[in-house]
Image 1 (cartoon, one colour):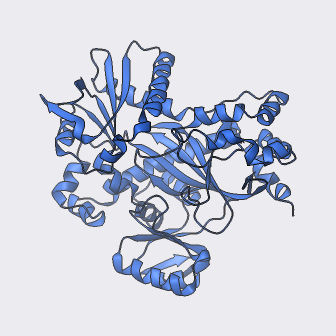
Image 2 (cartoon, one colour):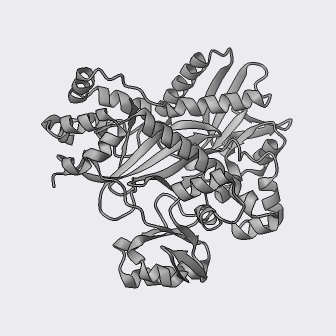
Amino acid sequence: MDPFDRCQTTHQDLSPQDLEFRSFAHQRPDLMDRTRQPVFDHGRDLLTFRLQPWPTFVGAEKLAELKRLSLGMSNLLKSVPQRIFASPAERASFYNLPSPEIADIIFSDPNCIAEVIARGDFIDTPQGLKCIEFNFTPNLGGWETPILADMHLSIPGFSEFVNRNAITVKYTNTIRILFQHLVEDALAKGLGADGRLTLGFLLSADDARQPHLGKPLQFFNQELKKMLADLGTCVTAEMIFCPYAELVISRGQVFCRGRRVHSLVDCSDDPLDSRVYRCFKARTVLFYNGPVSGPLSDKRNLALASELESSGLFSDEERQLIRSCLPWSRKVRSEQVEFRGERASLPEVLSRYREDMVLKEGTAAGGKGVLMGISTSAAEWEEAVRKALASGGWMVQERLESRPYLYQSGDSGCAIHDVIWGPFIFGQRYGGVILRMQPACGRPVNLSLTATEGIVLEV
C-alpha cells in the first residue's frame, strides 16, 4: 500500500488541513527533496537537532485532548512521591536519596513541585494519546517554534499551500509561555517589588563558556520583551545565562555580575550549590526545578500509578486517567502480576511477551537505558531482565504502536514515521508541544539517532 494511503486516517483525525498538506506535499518534488530546502540545515548556532521539513496541522479537538491529558498526567505524577510514600525515609529509600533528612529537605515547602517545568512524552495510538514518560526538568529542547515557523514560511511550496488554503499560521509560543510563568510566579511571591526582574538560566561551566551563546540569549530576551508587552505589565525583565561560579550570595540574596537574580532555572549538570538552595528555601530566589527533578522524573512513578490504580489512593477521575492514558507499567521485581487477563510472575511475563515489552531504567534520560523487546534478541533480553531484577531501579511498559504518520524522509522522499508528542507544562500552564518523528524501525524515537524535530501548527 502507498504510504500516503496508509496514513490518511491518521492525518485526517489531526485536521483536514493536515491531510490536505500531505496530499499536496508528496506530489511536489520541491517539498519531497530536502536538499532543495537548505534552510532546515542552517541555524546550528540556535538549533541543535535535525529538523523535519513537513509541519503538522492540529485542529482544536486534538489539541484540547492533548492539553487535558498532559495537564492531568503532570498533576498526577507530581503527587506520586508524597502520596504513595508517607515518610522521608520511604522516599529516600525508593528514590535513592542520600538520607531521610535530605528527602525531608527536598520535599518540604518550598519545593517547586507546584511550579515545576516539565515535558511529557506521548504516543498517539489507535486507542488515543498515551503517556510513556514525563520529564520534570528545565533542560529540555523544543522552545524553537517561532524560529521553525519562520523557516517553513520561507519555503515557496509551503507558502503556496498556506495561501491557497487561506491558513493563518498559529502556534503556541513555548518560550513566551515559559517566561510568563516565571514572571507571574515571581510577582505573585513578592519578588521584583521595584518593577525589575532578572531571570537566570543556570548552565554548566563548560556550556557557559561556549562562544555561540550570544545569539540565543538575544533571541530569548526579544521573546521576553514581547511577552511583557503582550501582558501589558509595567515590569521590566531580563534573562541571563550564568554558571554557579558567577553567583554571589549577599544579604541572603543571589546576585550575578552585580545584579539581583530573582529566578533561577536549573539547566546545569553541575552539583547543586547549597548556598543558592538555602536562598530558595528562604524564599529570596525562585529555583526551577532543583533537587526535586530526580524523584519526579523517575520513570518508575508511572509504574507506581499503573500498579496502584485500584488501591484507593486515587480519585475516580484519576483512576480513569490512568486507565485511559497510561500503558500497562510495572516495577521490575520478582512478583506476581496480571497481564492481559493472566496472572504469572513478572519475569515469566517478560520472557513470554518479550516483543510486547519495553524495559526502562528509572533514572536514565535522553533515550539511554531503554530496551525494546521487539528489536532485541531473546538472549540479550533475558540478560537485560536479569540485570534489571538485580538492580531494582527499572520498570517495564507494554510497548505501544504509534499511528502511522507521513513525513519527509532522507535526502528525498517520504516515509511512514513513528511520532512522540512532547507537550510542555509550566506549573498549571500548557506550554505548546514539539514532535519527534523517526522512520518506523521498531526502535526508540531518539533525536540523537535518526529522529527529526517538527513543528505543530494550530488550525
